[in-house]
Each structure stands twice: as C-alpha cells, then as structure tokens.
Amino acid sequence: MGVDRPRPVAPEVRPKGPSEWNHENPVAPSKPLPNRQAAEPPKYHFHAHFSANNTKIYLADPKGRPIPRGWWSGGSCRFKGVNRSTQEAGYQCAVHAFRRVEEIIQEKGPITLSVHLRGFGKGRTAVEQIFLTSEGEKVRPLVTEVEDRTPIKVGGTRAKKARRL
Image (cartoon, rainbow, N blue to C red):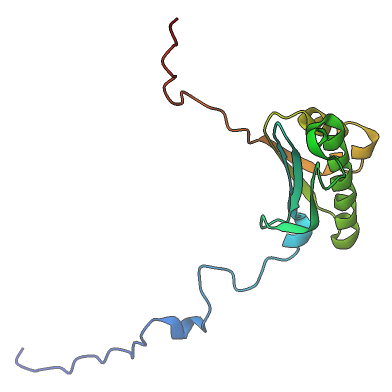
C-alpha cells in the first residue's frame, strides 16, 4: 500500500461556449422558414371613422402605417359642409377605398383585410352596406377580421345638479 501510483491523466476538456456553436444560436433556427410569406398573405387594415360631421376612411399597411394615396374623407370626395356626414359621402369614400384595395392587389399580390369601424355617424350604415353590394364583391373575400372600436362611455363624470324653478 505504500506504493504511489500515478494518477490517470484526464482527457483534455475543451471549454464549452459559443466557439463550439459556430456563431449560430442553438435555440433559434439559423435559416428562415421556407414559404412562410407564401402561406400567409400580408394583413392590411381598413380604418373607418364616423362622426356627426364627417366620415373618414384610410388604409394601413401590415405595420399599421397609412399607405400612399390611401385616405378619404367626406371633404376629399367633394362633399362640402353638412353633406360630408351623409350616407352618400360615406358610400363614395368606401368606393374610392375599394378601388385602392384592388390596385394594391394588382401591385403586391394577394392580401387579407382587417376592418376597424369607429363611431356612430350616418356614413357607417353606407360603409357596412357597400361590403354587401356589387362594389364590395372583390373586397369581401379578403376580409378576415371585423372590429368595432367605438368608444363607449361607462359611468363618466357626475351629472350637473338638476335645475329647480
């Protein structure tokens, strides 16, 4: 027992770290997924705001930015004064927007459309109805989502004291 044996030499252990990964993240895929863009067409947004005095419609790209030549209001559709809030003004704004959507389809290929409505103006019924008419025939299949963003007052501030005579 008094004989000392030489200890076995441990094999050289290389440090583990990024150098073994060849500068690639082992968790995330190093290459983009194939045909990801082809599977999901980009989602454009159709925003419509209806107030007591006007109707405004604008189109936004998938990142939420307004697209060039993509906004219309009662005034830009040649309605002035009180006529900007009429159903006809809302109808004309929607017709212009649908033409622009068709141009986008020709430029960039297939898209989907998310519709966002806000407010209770007179033009709202016109815009909702145009989706069901022949003008909305090409746009209707593109709609994947409809959302009502009308702010609804819940509670609110205290009412003014009742006047007594």
